[in-house]
Length: 234
Image (cartoon, rainbow, N blue to C red; front, top):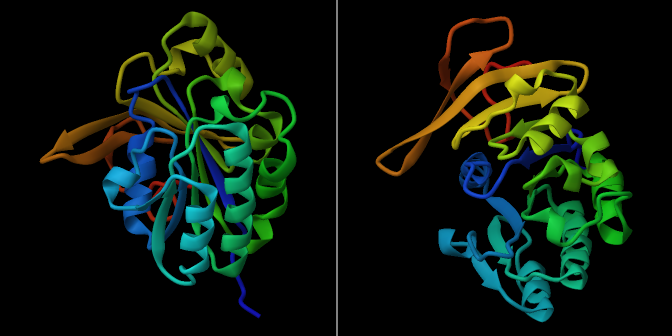
């Protein structure tokens, strides 16, 4: 039987156009087997196989037993729950990256329900890398927040939203980014792993920079296929 490392979940929180999806797409570029829930059709534009119906998604996954990148372009709770069921089983078949975009539209802020709850609570033994995005910390369900391996926190617009997430992770509100393309990375039990993070672009390719825990100097950061930044202790 195949031996797999434990799965991990990284949650990306920030307002629209804050840059929170930039590292997600970089991780997708570094992996060969990816399934995205893609309500805006962004991943379809990156060369993913685009599926707009449940039948198309089921057929695409059935035909993809090895490498493949598939995006389900849908925007309803029922479609999302169907995607979660497919994601759970496709990852059991072979380890995959699972991207869930814009969760506030399809999940509750309370307990993770149904197939979504099963995916984030019961699939970790099968080694998925789950990358989830949401615009506000208040919109993250408890199961996702509690199971997250790390939070990637991008720009917050209001004091209420910044104050909420600051209180949730136990840092001063001044730590929460308020500018576009800025970020911090936090993990429970470890605290802030990267502060004053920034994304810049050169020739349409993103570059990351930030201050690692225990340092006072900003350095270039390289993102790995695991979603983690190289040289940062998670």
